[in-house]
Image (cartoon, rainbow, N blue to C red; front, side, top):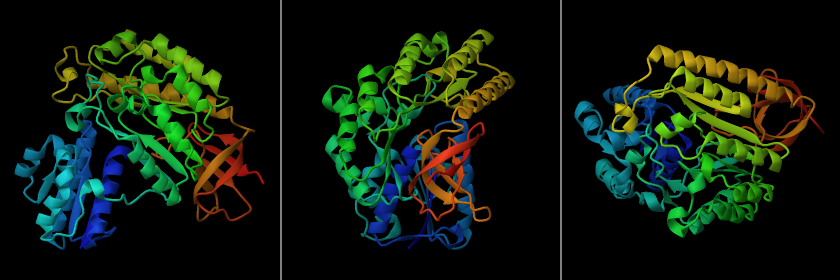
Length: 433
């Protein structure tokens, strides 16, 4: 059967999508890029915040139109399916199956029944079909989250933190290396909590050391690190592993201790500054990425200015910021003193404007330096190559490096580039022979 597959949301959801695609491939199904050609369409949804839910619903309705023509089956999976299964079934009759995350172990049975066949292997035994660029792959090391931040619906959707056994991760990592993956990106809702449920201790460093020993990887990157679990031992351990990039993705959410307490975030701003100072002492060039929420309930101008001061003090390399989105069934949803939407937007614009200035100042320090770049594409008209250095993750949030070269460079190669120009997020340069 010809299947159209749409994966929405984060890289963690993408790994689930790749596993589903592997399961479908095992049954002899093929994927098509044109939804008009698809006999079945599967949408793996996100339901984290309001904008993600809106995108998912819009996509479902768009694909439901295809059932008037060639499409026979419309299937919805993922976070939205987990959170609103009954509503989706009742309100969108064009959907033939809504498969919640808890039902993934039985997905093959559900789809076999829907498609009137018996060919699919189980989700848990399916080999992922890597859908990203072949030199980069994600490795999901845990599912769910136990942090219980007051604004977040992830524990309601995905459950508590459950680490993947280390041997299973190492087998998957070896398989990815054998397939030619050069950049391995470790992901979870909280990567720093890896292993606490299985081994009784934080085990991310143990995992990194074992993955580092696998031949084939050139870069190993870590995303979503909880600040108070980035211990001195972890930082010092990473510094001894050359393949592990000094790329610290630390979702802070705010720069005020009072706001962090309301968000149920552990640790203090003082502790975070000490941790960041240790990172910068330990590496000649470390990248610090974070996210912030503005307009959280009870955030006054005082707390917002504390956040702005925090940004000034740390001078983050990469920052994403969002206006607070009330999520039903979370503690923050019923908090009093909600911030007006116009104030949220004003604060968001103020923060991002200043951060763009800081980013440009940081980027200008790279002019004249030579950095390693992973080549990923080339502009067909100008011949300019595009790639990423250690400071940019593959999730499309960070910047790129654009450079000239006198030779043909295979995509997926690593080259040396001397930086000649800095932009707020991107860099320009030329290859160094």
